[in-house]
Length: 417
Image (spheres, rainbow, N blue to C red):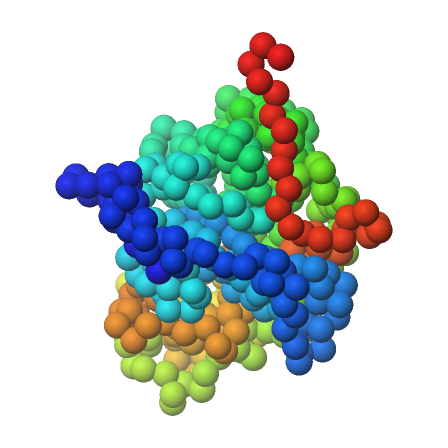
């Protein structure tokens, strides 16, 4: 793996020159052989998908704001033979965790220093760009903060990839659901790309549609939709917005109504995902006194009481595991009544389960629990990503003239043409 570090002592160009020999050695592959390779997938569900999209057994990807690698995990779970060309992630622990679970050819740290010239062609361009500025749990600063402008930098990289004939087949981006309605005080608008979104969008999404999605719609069929983990048989209230862009020269007919068809009724509750209390470290249990209370719960999150002596509402409320989990966050964890007057937060293992990470996925041994909890509060639910990509792949129109997923190029018009 080639690792690009950003500091004041050297630049990408210098680092690239220093590592050129190793880069050429690492990325030199026989693409034809890799595309024709077919892995035997034992799982019946995976076998069904592979039979339907067997030409996708080899997929290359450039992953931005990778986090702990939910998109990579979902694609691997679908049976894809992943070639991770590059991963860009600012924080150390997620970078190390991704490298522990996947063979990554290049890792970058700061997305704002990355450009199309640093990237090889890849079939998929993915990114869960920072959500703090658009989340109800954050300060809602929108574009008035550097993190809120990442979407525009990603847009510039995509445009440069198109111009350099490295346009990805699929672009997959994710953020919080509230992005759609952020900054309503500046205006409300009809959406142009939001499939099945019945409400009016806010000023922030209008800007994204006008300045990012509309220019890219020249090359891509674009749609966005909102999916909640609880609608994909996961007892977890996690509402997220996803953008899917598919190149117009490809035989795909995707929209989010196809993802809605893959929703299924919740058949489990949080209790099914929990460890017995006697196996849980004492650090997860609250020392505050529990006060049982009656509530008129209107949804699947069942509040049953409060912790005395705690001022912040989200930290004070106690939830029953007979319902679903509150949204996992990077901050204060929700509390659950797991026994008689036994109130605790969720363990790392339990969070991995409700974010539907498979058993083969592992954290490196030197990652502290605090970092694991933060990653699990940031990540996408793997089941949801799997269902979206399955819907994408199944939307392919089969024809005799287009049966492969190999690299093709988009011709861009020259200025003055």
